Amino acid sequence: MNRVIISILFLFGAIISVFAQFSVLGTDYEGVSPDRYSNMDSVFVVKFTDVAELKYNTEDEAMFVWYAYNAEGDKKELYREMEPKTETSLPLLDKSSSGYILEADGIETKSVWVFNYYDFEPVINYVEPYVSLSDSCNYIQLNLGKIETPMEYEPYGYVGLPFEVEQKFHITYDSTYFNAENNKYETEKIEYVIPNKAVDVIVPSPLTNTEYKLFGNQFSIAFNDTVKAVSDTVESFAVETHVFGRVRVREYATNEKDRGEPESLEETTDENILKLEGSAPLNFEALTYSSQAAFHYEWCVSKDKSFNSCMIKSRDKDFRYAFTEKGTYYVQFQVSNDAIVKEYGGIDFGCTQIREFQVDVMESLGDSLIQIPNVFTPNGDGKNDQFKVVYRSITDFHGRIYSLWGRKVFEWKDPAEGWDGTINNKPAADSAYLYIIEATGYLEDGSKKKITRKGTVSIVR
Image 1 (cartoon, rainbow, N blue to C red):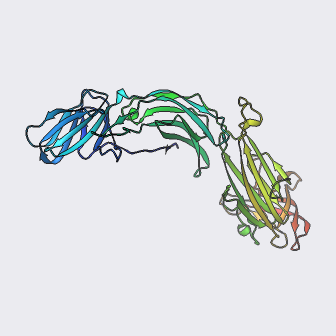
Image 2: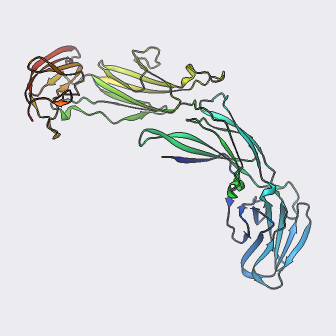
Image 3: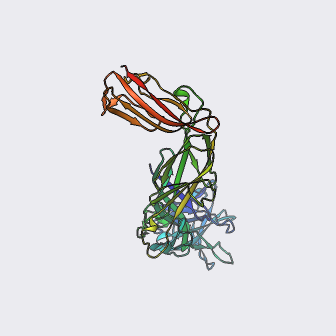
């Protein structure tokens, strides 16, 4: 799934295309909200002036007179209606920029300014990413090579600096975002809108290899004038990660169903470090999802919140560990890009993100327990299809199953797992089988004990 993000860096005035009374006929046009201090009624940017007309509608009939004026204050009558009307129109002067005054019944006057777009068409030369910022892991700078002619207008009789139409330029590029619904990074198109005065803009570092495209202003886009520049491809080096953790709850139970299922995965963040707890032995699991530039993974389990030393280290992407001793533990995950093995033109692009967990391991829930069934029915009906033990407060486990002739047919080291009644992926014969189970468990006082169980289990289909 793709998505589009539009971000407006600067916004001065709003573009509107429909006005209550003035409009343009014969060509494409864009209306611009005049500066409120200008007292202008309308400002238009038209695609062509030589084939267009300026039109005015009103509910009440009036005698209309059209005038043209320029920034120097020169005013000239252009057209006069000879009878009262509710609408009037005037061919536009074929000029790059001109002001118009409409007089109604010799009293009310309204003023309009019109720009010919192609006389103000921007020149787009280049867009150049500049990645050597102090915070380049989060942001890069774009240098914009563009030339635009100011679009200035003045009310009739106005004395002072002219008002200016804000030209907004567009930058687009591809990045990725983390879709929490399916735990995947997916493509998104980012669009920034910037004003004409900007020559440098700061944007987030992309999470995928991308190129930047600089388009013309809002009028270029409206008139399908695809002036643009495209940068060289920028290789992704920023790193983003989402890390989720959970533990398996051990309940004080005497049957398999009540033994406890894994808790749901929850994310740990900088703002909210995930705290997990449970009785020993506590199985901890963490899953990570990182952006394209992720290269180096490192886990540290410590009893020191500052992580000055690690009890356990791992460089796997995901992490699983069984806490067997009571206490508070801290788990840290670091993900980095490949700057440690790759040259980036002499620039240090070592980007890292860190996520942490707190794991509180409590006393075990009483004496250890292993209960073993003497029969199971692997017939695919979803009931008692596996040979599994019921257990509590078990830290080490090793189980083996043999045929009556001494052949080992199954072996497992996780008490939560079991035998499905197959040998080499084929159904085992209905018969009795020998099992040997060796484990280490807890007593209520926290001490450990060795447990050995031997017996037979029968397959009945």
